[in-house]
Length: 317
Image (cartoon, rainbow, N blue to C red; front, top):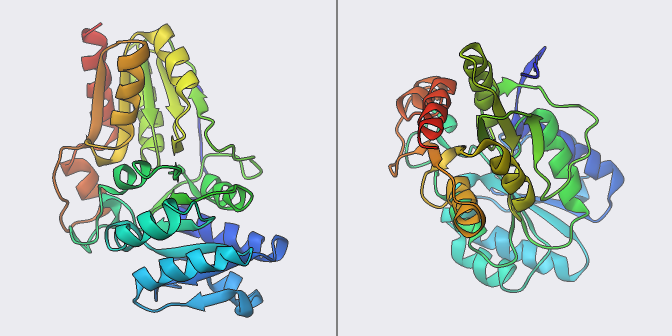
């Protein structure tokens, strides 16, 4: 098992803010828009240096999406930012009609996704956003795993032509990927090569998968762990190459088990290589108020839950 260590913990939303700061200096066409959540989206450095390239839309998310679509017509690259619940559920119609259908070059950047939003509770903890966004034709969907990868992804999507949904979160988590990495949209990252079970993880669950791999190793099980940071387009080649070797799969995501990464992987396996698959995800329910750690434990999104799922998958070979 390849060992991953860390010296600090940071929130992925700060990685987004750092990426925006870089883009503010490098790309004059990048414009930031926000729905009254500048502090939560860590946009202060960008705004300080580029006040003429920032639009405060207020608590008017639908209008923000419409303004973003309009800005693309003049060659700007709008980054529309708010909480994931408001960035998708509240404005799905505007995204569908004004961005996806028109194939506008809008980057929808969503913080506070999943259960780990924590104490704000079920009304803010959207667990359906990956499914909603990946179903839109032409929409690229990205869910990076730590601060460094979120920063790299933020910078990368500015050069990508077309609509993008970038998802990140609130809690501080280990920073374990390279600071100088190059982010490749649609290209899965091999975290650890293994032979007994394939664990496909996304977002905050990648670190849980790494911990699970260490626990499995202690029991003589060699897990292959792959970071699926791009939900769409999905790296089908990496998935199939892995399960050809291991013969079974586990998917791990901070999302409803319906419509997310697990279902995307299942479609690939059904069409190409039918092997046992287990889901580690929220079991078709809303969340509730609690600390991120409490919620991850209650809803079955911890390293020990991935370990249990891996054993179930192996037993079904």
